[in-house]
Length: 451
Image 1 (cartoon, helix red, strand yellow):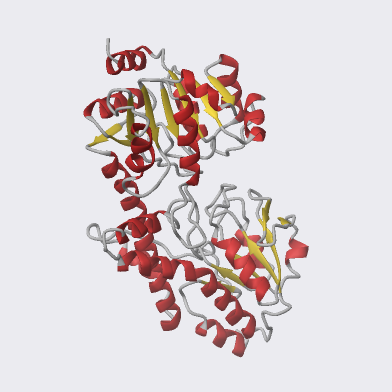
Image 2 (tube, helix red, strand yellow):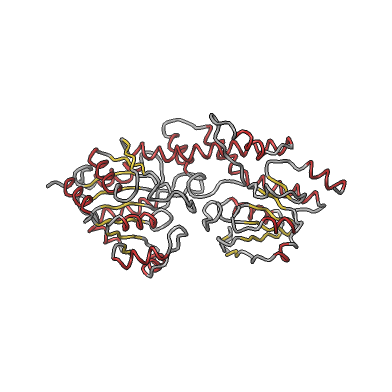
């Protein structure tokens, strides 16, 4: 029996031992689904604090309950480790490590390269490797296939290789790793078949495509589409600010059209791992082919500028109350990049915090989910406690993240000026609420005449 048939049989019989490298927002949920699918899964991460936490049945990922981790560990289906020698006995390895951007906005694939170095030393002949980390088209071949083949191995014979983009949406109550369709592309037909066979036991729907490059490009297309449309609606919000039109009402009206329109919403910037980073991977790779994407670069510029625009809005509002942004006490409401999670990756609130401090403001924040972060000086900043009497002493508040736990009525009743970047106060009529994308001239008039 050749390597392909042996591996396929193991996947079908669920006797294959699987490894997941990188136990973060992508890797840990994947481990849980693989364990529930009947496989023995080794979770590999060099951060021993994470490994130790998981060995003790404690999760650090909001979407993965500790009870689920404890059950998987107790059953022997999930084995967290920081030992790469484990790779020597694995039949399949899913790579779920970070792929950030460098300071120059170039792809940083160092985490993938580090994993590949360990795989080269420990790979079991006939194993399947699946890269899940978001990256530019061609990464799977350039950083994995070519490296292994340089050692004399042949893809499709001595090892099998696929790319399957992660589609994790932290905090999403409807879609998770199991019920989100999984795209997968392999370098040979045998690779695709093995990838589909394995993941069919792990997720509800598997969508095979012809190659890793198609799978890699599909992920970048998804998030570049979102980045460009968010940038467009952010620009519309700034336009509406100037024209004293409520952009939120405009979006609601346009959304009544049953065809040809998809609503996007403005905000203080974009956060998370995907949308701020993925389009730049695509733009960077395109330049290799002498292709320059004007849409991607323009969208990135607009979205990156939104925290600065929110600072400008805060300055405008404070001026209405005869106050300068310098020495004003400002409270940021919500620091996570999206509602009801603790995820701070690329959060626009972090950028706004620094911008306000640079302007001389005294800045604090309240977020019951994200209770601390490191500022640009690597100092730990802690969330303040929920205290309405203390909140009433701020010169203004800026809502960045619309957590469901926030009592917006209580906050509005304090009378403190609030810059609402998410339309969170849509149902509250109060002169102290200033929404992004609505203009402030009408409120200036009301304040001037005392009505």
